[in-house]
Length: 189
Ligand SMILES: Cc1cc2nc3c(=O)[nH]c(=O)nc-3n(C[C@H](O)[C@H](O)[C@H](O)COP(=O)(O)O)c2cc1C
Image (cartoon, rainbow, N blue to C red; front, side, top):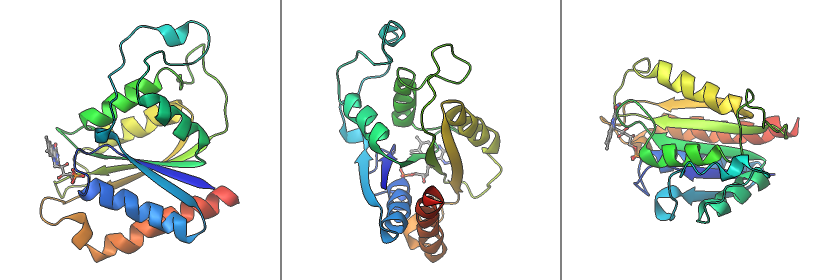
């Protein structure tokens, strides 16, 4: 079982990365092989709207480091995508990644939709504001969008990072490891 995490914060050691690592730690404790990627380090262009992916194979023609990530996603049994909330939405890094999924993960309503094994995806948003309801419609929309791409999505929203960084919160340590652990045990059942 392989669980792969993607951090879409520019901060390598910030809240989002800490949460992703805790989830992966929980999976690892259950015997999973884990790997994580810091998207900001990679040379990845936004979608160029060439529609090359619509002509023949479902393959993106932009030859950059996103090609590695397509392979990573394909090879993983479960995924963790983590983004900080910026202006009530996902980060620019997460948006570039998501748009690039258009090439290979057509939504269910698209004629090119390709049935494939459903992968579990833990979608993590961290936000500075303590109110869990503030961006709930956007998070629900985003969860639905990934579901339309064929992922089985579990949403985790971490609030209040403005008043205390995630790594200082003892409750989160246990809770996030449990998310990672469950990801592995549910996958096996
Ligand atoms: C450009 C920018 C925009 C932000 N916008 C929001 C926001 O709209 N709502 C919110 O609650 N927090 C906002 N934040 C705070 C971050 O979401 C929060 O600190 C997050 O935990 C940072 O994650 P990181 O440590 O992984 O980078 C913003 C931070 C930045 C830098």
